[in-house]
Image 1 (cartoon, rainbow over the protein chains, first blue to last red):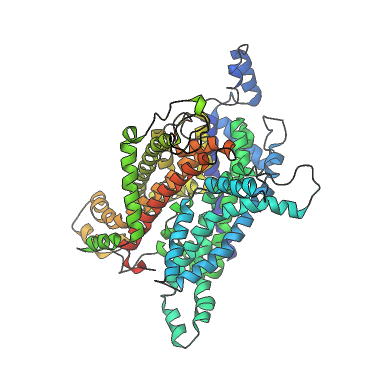
Image 2: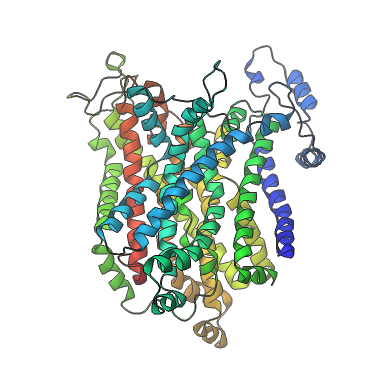
Amino acid sequence: MRGFVARRLLGLVPLLFGISVVIFALIHTAPGGPTAVYALGPDFTREQQAAIERSLGLDRPLAVRYLAWVGGMLRGSWGHSYKDGRDVRDVVLERVPATLTLMGTAYAVSLAVAIPVGVFTATRPRSPARYVVNVLTLLGISVPTFWTGLLAIMCFSVWLGLMPSGGMYTIGAPFSLLDRLRHLALPALVLAAVNLAMWARYVHSSLIEVLQEDYIRTARAKGLGERVVVFRHALRNTLLVVVTLLGLSLPGLFSGALVTEAIFSWSGNGRLIIESLLGRNYPVLIADFMILAALAVLGNLAADIAYAFVDPRIRFEARG
Amino acid sequence: MPSSIPASASRREARPAGPEAPGPIAGAYSRSWRDFRRNPLAKFGAATIVVLLCVAVFAPWLAPRDPEAIDYFRGLAPPGRTAWLGTDPLGRDTLSRLIFATRVSLVVGLGVASLSVLIGAALGAVAGWSGGWVDSVISRLMDVLWSIPMLPLVMVIGAFIKITPPLLVLLLGGISWVGVARLVRAQALSLREQEFIAAARSIGLPGSRIVIRHILPNTTAPMVVAGTLSVASAILVESALSFLGFGVDPSTPTWGNMLQNAQNYLVRAPWLSIFPGAMIALTVASFNFVGDGLREAFDPRLKGR
């Protein structure tokens, strides 16, 4: 088991390296660049532009820039924000708790609803309830997050006046848990809606598959009640598949989190990407991107390890 | 995007499928077609898609007014007799803009799906068939692309270059083929071990011919399903990009662009937010309905469950 984890951790190194090459090359070869905005000024000369680029190290060849950046990242000096000169590491890492809170809450809510719903429909094939849930979950994965977000704001903040329309807390007010939760509720539920529909479908289809296995027939044959068969025997194996799928779908879910953060002015890493993109703040942009990718990859790895922990076949297959 | 994750991304199906792997038995497709037609959701989706395609093709004739015509004196008019679905702050007709925006969404959705099926089928089949270092290289590339959140990646490009629908098709197609490729690769891996492939090899067929004539046709069903579902997810990504301001140029009416402008008028003009979002949801849902119906039709084991 320890060998498996070590191998998978080692496998992350080339993966993160590959991701960093793609992102770095993409951002640094894009036209425009951080000095483009100055070029709009009538008094701005080519020499001044060149001087700024030299001071930011942008005049060096791409490969040199990349190596310097990787070296810095590994040594813990992530560079300075173009915007205010702050240490990039602080700028990026201070946003992580907000993103994790939002995504964690959304995950917990989705799973808490998706598993019972999936179990309910899988144990009642060909029932009207199954049909209704199928339609609802298909609709759920089709409705764009940003539209649900706008509708939620329109409904709960504008018309009913029940909820704040954005931000993470009331500015100027002393810390209060209730206030935080009120701000968290709408974005978390909006983000949860998509995942919920998708995962309910996963749970449903994998439980259906598991319920056809021989050992389930054995369990039924020896006279176990349906409740025990479903919850003690089938659901456990179903959750294994679901765990893997949760890991695999993580990068996609970051995209949803980004949109949600944008709508609800939630100061997480997704919103930081938008801010640093608009400001052409390369060091922050790249570091934030890497943080998102690393979170996604680590989440994926955690799912893999969880899977291998309970299913020895995976451990041995991966060795070959 | 989330909905593009195929069911077979799970480990269970990555193993050889065994003797019951579905193949093109004579009559199998006609039975699937019959199942598909009996599925009300799929029928609804297919009908809606046909209507939307007509709307996109005949947009200039269907739109009551010029989508770009500005009329400052009738800005933010609520839905009524002159403008059925109201007007935006510049007095442009919402209905006409919605009709023209159908074009962008469908072009991007269908284009991305075709491109990603094309790339995914080619690379997936090559990886699964050749194995060895070729498989390793392609698989690592897939891992990298899969691990980068797609939306921010395209946003980066959209922030620097003026995005047009064809460019967006290239970008999204160039990234989102991974789902199809994994599917095809897994199928190719399991088919490679079967007798009919051994037979094809024994009579001396070259590898390229075996892949094209024997492997790929056997992956049609999952590819069609994945392709349909990826139309849906491409439309979602396109509109999310436009909504965030990094998508198709804001002067072009797209549903996402319309929603972005609508954000500031949630109170005064809620219709600006409601209609474009409803169009996105309807379109995406239609493709998902069809995709789900196709999957059930191709895999009789799933029927009615």
